[in-house]
Amino acid sequence: MRTVIYPGSFDPLTNGHLDVIQRATKLFDRVIVAVAKNESKNPLFTLEERLELVERAVKHLPNVEADCFDGLLVDYVQRQSAQAIIRGLRAVSDFEFEFQLALMNRKLNENVETIFMMPKDTYVFLSSRIVKEIARLGGDVSSFVPAHVQKALVGTLMVSKA
Image (spheres, rainbow, N blue to C red):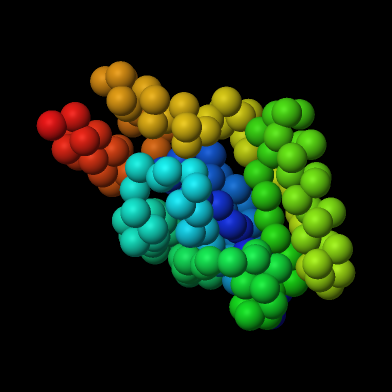
C-alpha cells in the first residue's frame, strides 16, 4: 500500500490544502493529513480543533485520514510506514524553504521521498495566514475555506475579540 503524509499546521485548513489532498488521493492508496503540533507558530486553533476541522473536511474521501503528530516528521513517516511526504508549493518563494526541508528530511532518513505539488491556479494565492487576517478584519472567507472552517473562524475570532 502506497502511503503519503501531508503534514502542516492547517491553522486553518484551506481549499488549497483540500485541492492538494484530493489530487494526492489519485496518486496514493492512503493519504494521511498530519496536523503538526507546533506551538511556536501561536496557532489560532488548538491542535484538537485543527484535527477536527481536517477530519470533517476529508470524511468524504475514503482513502484519507487525519492524524496529528509531534516531533520529527521523518519519525512520524516511518511509524506510519509511509513512503513519501507531500508538500504544497504556491509560489517560487515557497520553494527555497521547502527544498531545504526536503533535503534535511532526506538526510535524516534517505528512504523518505518528498513530492511537491502545486495547487490549482485558483488557490495559488491562498495561505492560512492570509485567510485568518481577512477573517479578523471582517472579510468574507467563504470561497477560501470549507463552510465548517469559516464558521469556526468566525466563532473563534468573535470570542477572542470579547
